[in-house]
Image (cartoon, rainbow, N blue to C red; front, side, top):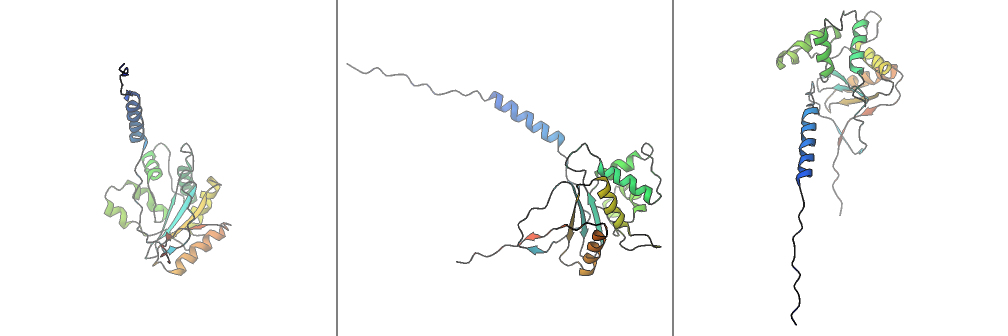
Length: 213
């Protein structure tokens, strides 16, 4: 008696829900993602064997390029609803008697909050953020003043102090170029210590080690 052959059926998977979900996620990320602004200077960090990851939120970063110019950057913290960068900017304006009105100077304030690292005397920042030509913006990047004037602390000192007052969870990160002068980096460390910051991060490139057989 011949065997009864059971008909085989190929399984059918409905991919429609997955495609819909993929489209929704793709649209969401395209609408919410913002490009990271270009940094003010190219920093070639020295190498080290440290594998510790630097924090990516709640950080203020102090950059030192190969010509010892100093740049500064700070984020808005872990929560995007916080506006530390704007608050710090407004407080620095008070410190340096630069009149800024939140309604009249909305464009300046908005552009500053969306900008990346910067390096210039504070009085030049309102003009700098409104420039559209990259070369003109680059010319104004003369570095944040590190010297005290008329017995008053340096501008970098106030950037660090006010940033810590507005965001107590902020960590200090120093990213120096491998060719930067040691004295320039030491001066920055002294200013950080004057703000009673005993612990800070140094950004380096992970050095590759050759495997020994």
